[in-house]
Length: 132
Image (cartoon, rainbow, N blue to C red; front, side, top):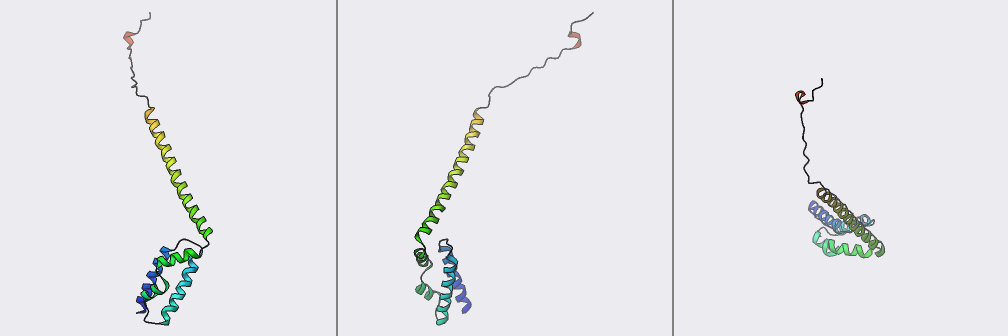
């Protein structure tokens, strides 16, 4: 019975870890919550994961709570820079790709379309002017 509870709480915390936004306080928040959940389950052996969800909240609700406890400026700053770097990366890749395509296209259109022919004339010794 305890193993089943442990597996279910592990699944609950796995979902929660996926839901929580990246932040330096994330590990501390999860550790504190894990301690509270363990105490809650020890108080009554009949409690299960559904009781935990109703008492503490779903992973989505806990993510909202966690985001609300964060310093708004710090979180906004991280989100802004994350988006900024993603946009810069995509823009840089686009510029490099456009440059490569331009160079390839320019190279293909600037090739001369003339055919060079070469003629070789062989003069035999008999054909040479005779010196006497």
